[in-house]
Length: 498
Image (cartoon, rainbow, N blue to C red; front, side, top):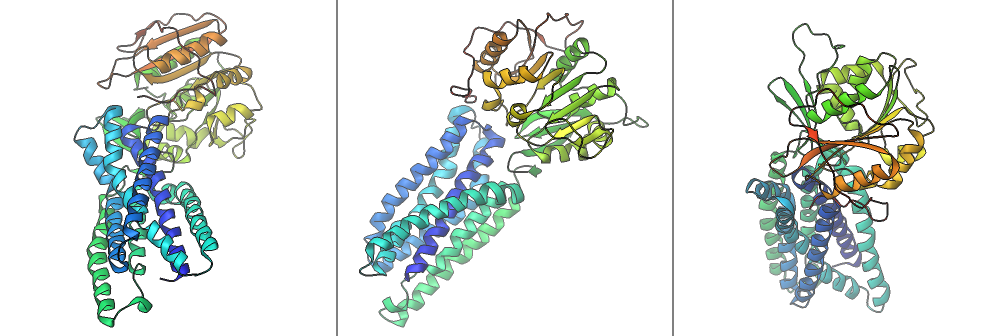
């Protein structure tokens, strides 16, 4: 094998390995959420696979040359199949009942560890061939081998994060990983200079064709499984589901918003009927606390149902909605009639000062960026703020720290409203409650019904002045007492549900 052929294959497999690792973390989110724990599990599992694969590959590299080549080709073919079918394996494990942290760990190992082992198995043989191809230049050859692996890993990370996952989705990314591994197989052969006779070369070519053909069919067929969700970006995996008269927006299989379909003859401008109970509590609190012309900051656009309720009920109000994923805004415009109509009628692209980039008369400014970045750099003040940002089924850790809320208090003159999902009196609820009670003298909290996963929406309101009691509460919601906890910081923060 030529030196540069070995280097190119090493680079290609490094690209595949890192792309696969990042895609594994993304495809895990619809089943088990996104958190420090899930990413730790994915990274540890894939790296463990790489380590074992390199160790086994070293043993393979010591075999007779043709036997070693055959073993490497078999590993690459198997890698292609396993990578292409990883989303299917994950969905099957979830369907069989894998739940919780234990189920997540088991699923990660079974779905991603085997391919991680096999994709790194060829590397020792390829490194050996590269070094042997340039006698007397062993040092520089080994340096190029190591550099090729690093460059490939860098390119794979960039490819996954900026290209494949945002543009073609996770399922197609896995298929592309499998196809790339399969593409390397024909180049792993002894070569004419190493042939004992032409018969051996012909046998080798037949082996390659026999292995690649069926594997290619499986890899291509994996595309037929489709995406794990209806709409997918590098940040969200979104489904739109209609149940009865309600249109539900699901992100990573967690319900983010819901809106009732329009009745015959009902105008789009009608005040929305909030379906989700936590939004009913937040809106009841906002409706009681705010004046006729409030300026409200929403961190987390979601289904835009609360900004729509605010603007529909108060013609002089204005809102800034900070939503990190433009895809969510596009899906809302296409599928949620009232919120979509409000965005169409009053929405505009807003900068951090709240200035309009388009519609001069817009009242709903939309900013597509991370909520923490907006809070840190906002150049205007607000009368109230709603913290309702989610990554899968949990609050992003960097939005659940006392530094975030201190900065929020610096730009918000009035109350702050928070929605989160946690176990009753769980660590997240106690941490956020500790932050709010440290910054505000008055904090109210309520909790909704506990789901079959043992979690519930906890909603909080914090202000400098006492809150007037609400006349009614949403169904199954009640005031709740939250125990003492440690306020999360940027240094020691929330790490996700176990």
